[in-house]
Amino acid sequence: MRISGSAGTDRLGRLVLVPVAVLTAALLALHQVIPGGRLLPTFLPWLGLVVPVLAGFALWRRSRPALIAPVLPLAAWLAVFGGHLIPDGQTRSDLVAVQHNASDENLDPAGTVRTLLAAGPDLVALEEVTPEALPAYLAAFPAEYSHHAAHGTVALWSRFPLAEAAPLDIRPAAFGPDWNRGLRAVARTPRGDIAVYVAHLPSIRPGPTGLRTGNRDDSVTRLAEALKSEPAERVILLGDLNATTRDHGLEPLTSLLNTDESDFAFTFPTALPIARIDHVMARGMTVTAVRTLPRTGSDHLPIAADLTS
Image (cartoon, rainbow, N blue to C red):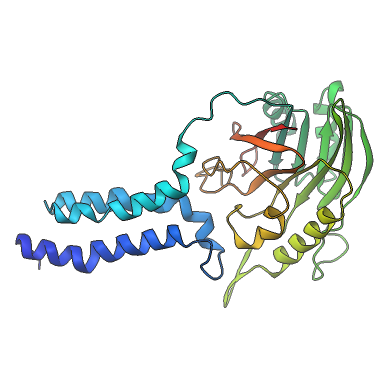
């Protein structure tokens, strides 16, 4: 039975609109201290959609008091994400890095490389580069990117000479020796050496008791330990980290490295990007901007990042 009249509208506000508004605002404001912190950070920007829904209900019920309900979650959303709506203007860039999970099912390596190089990168990191596909990628990069390193399914191309290229052991204890998703190299740039890390962390898997993050967290710990012991002053991490920077599980990395908090540069999945799980992070340098690039033959969108010393 439809509730009618101002009393019914007030009851709707008290029982539905106001609790939903308060809950949404609380999730936004307290997301950093809510236990767990796996799914919520991924979908956090999308909580803003609650605001027009609440406003629509209020308008439908023709209730001025109910229109107050969306104000609280709107204020909370703007407090978290409002700064990203303001253009930064022109940003200075000393180096451009591109990060892309190219997908082991990508049928167009040459087209993928063309899309990535249109951003004018100095460094290009790829994940899910199978041994069978590696020759096609090597052939697609022009001579100016002749400096490259590959290990397992991760690879790095550079305008600058690469030294000390070696595998990076971020393999969780539960995985076998055939799992190789990390490498480290030193880029000899005109401004000095930069240690470059390329990593592809394990995915989060659903389990009978919730999300299984143990392998991902184990890999994060190993990567963080390597970064802590890294002697180079300037460090860049490029990778598919299978989580947003607001995921509590990435705190060992985000506490060591900086990145541009462009929460709306969503990379996955390409059909309807809802989260950025591909990242460029740095130490001794500043990531000033992150943007997505056009779609390739992958289920991820590439990103390009501007960095300054």
